[in-house]
Length: 165
Image (cartoon, rainbow, N blue to C red):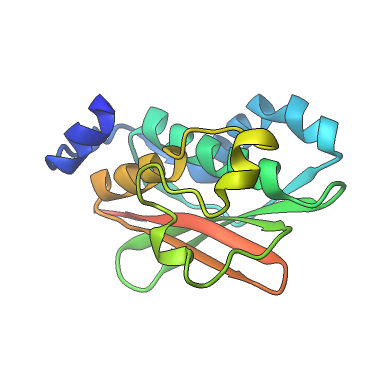
């Protein structure tokens, strides 16, 4: 909560050396290897770019996104992490999974603190605190970016942008 409060006050990320975002993703994927193996999931990383970021913060955001994707992905499916430059000075990172579609009315609130789209299932089947995506949003803002989510037809994409300057 202290971290989120600091981010809300406008604290900016401490950008360090330029790093490969695909390499950061690979490190986070390795951290999640055991739960992925339990669910028979694989990961592909599409794209790469180099960028000066606060490496621990970006890893934390990616870990939260991967954790959610693992939690809700169809067993035996492939998670996709997409990295790409966008128009202007931004880079977008998306984590995509096949699984239950998130209702359209819930998408705008996904990044709110403590929000849970299906409270009855979260507590019993997939316990969590409802802070992971709000932390992703805060990390995006600290890099002058923003979070985004899309879900339709059994595919959900959740990610964030990072400003390159």
